[in-house]
Amino acid sequence: MWLFAAFIAIPMIEIALFIQVGGWIGLWPTLGIVILTAILGTMLVKTQGRQALADLQRSFSDMNDPTEPLMHGAMILIAGVLLLTPGFFTDALGLALLIPKFRSAVFSFLRARVSVARFQMGRQDPFNDNRRDPFTRPPHGAQRPDVIDGEFHEIDPDKRPTHRPSGWTRH
Image 1: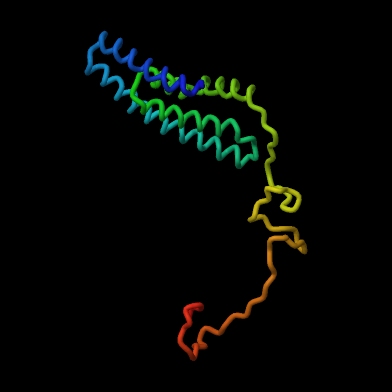
Image 2: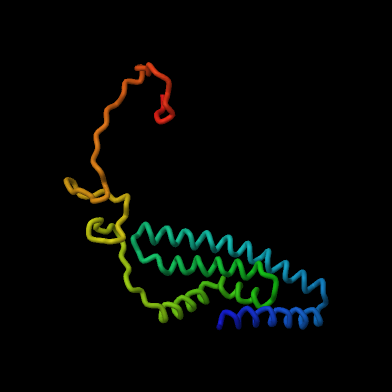
């Protein structure tokens, strides 16, 4: 229900702000401000997005919890969408999300309301976890239940077939 209310309220707020600001400064300056905030927002999102990506990579390489850098990156992405959306209200929200202290406050607010059931970093035991990584090698001598053992013989490359290809093999 709250999402439906947001889809109704935000366009109404934007229209009201366009009418008010357009009445104060005129049509062309109003449109110029909207275009200027989109350009400025794009540049800010680009620079802060690079920083957020570097922070995320650093958290992965240091084996730290990546939750906060991921959340900052997501908020920067949302800020970019809001800044590209024409309007003063969405621009104000987008610019607010580009302020690191505001993002940290939003992260703290959301973190207090979300509970994580399980979080694990590092390699998992491929035999004791239902969500095992298919690319993890089992310990030496252990058999994985989804691997079929087989043998092969390499065919000498200069040996030519004596019959036409059947379509089932490559010759």
